[in-house]
Length: 136
Image (tube, one colour):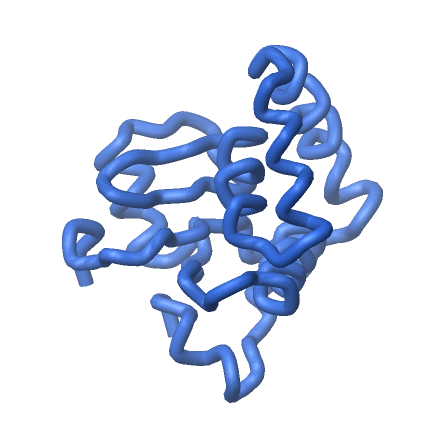
């Protein structure tokens, strides 16, 4: 599979991070129209994304859509646009300066293993959602 072959938004996530796995589960439960597909950053597709965009030290959420990537708070806000209400309303904070949003995002990301823990492997999706995971 190649990144250019994917027409849907792809949410790349740290497959070893419990917070990231929780974020994926949250999107699966609250997404409005099942458009987002998923792949771990540790997968072949994730490594392709990191290489193509020459990403350094990326280890949390990355959204890839229409040939563009969105990092940190920008990725989270683009995802929020696809969620059901009331979660969709969180997209309004996009008007805050990116530097401020990313400061908070980075703080949580820096401490996520200590707060939420770490796992040795990606959590497997249930049968209903398996087709939305590109790296299975």
